[in-house]
Amino acid sequence: MARTAKMQFIELLVMKDDISRVIEYLGKQGCFAFQSDSVAQSLNKVHSSAPIDAMHQLDSGFGEEFDHLVEAKEIFQRLQEARAYLNIPEPAGLTASTGLPSERDYRDTRKMISVTEQFKREESELEQAHKRMESAYREALAFSNLQVPYSELDQVSFLSIRIGRVDPERLENLKFAVGEHGAIVALGEDKSRIIAVSSKKGRFSLDTELKKAGFVPIEIAKDFQGIPAEALDRLRQQTAKAQEAFEQVTAARRKFAETHGFIFQHLLCNFSVATQVLAVQENLESTMLVYRITGWVPERDATATVREIDDLAEGRVAIRLYKPDEVPGVQEGVEQVPVKLNHGEFVGSFE
Image (cartoon, rainbow, N blue to C red; front, side, top):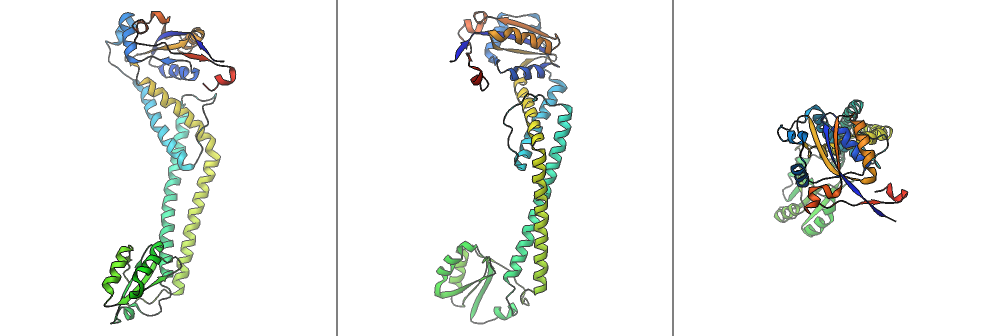
């Protein structure tokens, strides 16, 4: 059975060098509800103190650690792209070892991204090379049975001849449309190249139907007389070699993903934490030295939260606790005290 927990308001003034770790801690605890900006300003007007007043007199300054988080956000996006390309599953969730990325994480990630991008370039180049060779081989194969010079066909006085490409799926419709006014003959096994023949009188009708079918003419030299068998064999070998090279780099990419999948997921979790910390940190009141955090924690967790934050920041933090009726926003009806539900042990782990 779920039971509501009493809440307590907490205000933290955290040094710039400690803010990321404090936000990370609050996120991992999963029991802190941030206060809205408007209500925070209301509290600041009523319960002012020297450190808080000073915050409004100083310019905001984020520093190197903030820049590091901005870099982490960019790296996280690139990691996501690399993970998707490698077809590595997304992390199931954060683990006990998840935290803000270390310097080693930055080094490992740069290396992982570099290797992935190299795979991507090689795979793309080899795939395109294979497609070009395969297209050349199929086209050569399509015209391998032309046993007389093309000029002899082209000079037949009573015929109009067109040679080119057409979508194989449109071939039957094209044949039906041309009907008895001409002939459509497929070249090669894939039927994407054709010879279209009609009488000189019917050439306009033939050209109209060819245009409807998306026909693309192929320029053929007048002395062209088919493809020699030796040339066909050479093209076939080159096509097979290009396919083998592409398959090898694809296999290497899959092996890399298999052996480095866990590392990718670990790095994604850490850089995800950094991205979320940045999202929170960007919206906090701050000076060049101090950040201000306000929000709600369950009353039963307040003492432990205060102690652990103080230990985490090594005493470099100012902390104030308020009961709900001491918060101006609550008194004025501007803010509702958030509700924290206490569940059983099993349900609680999925809050």
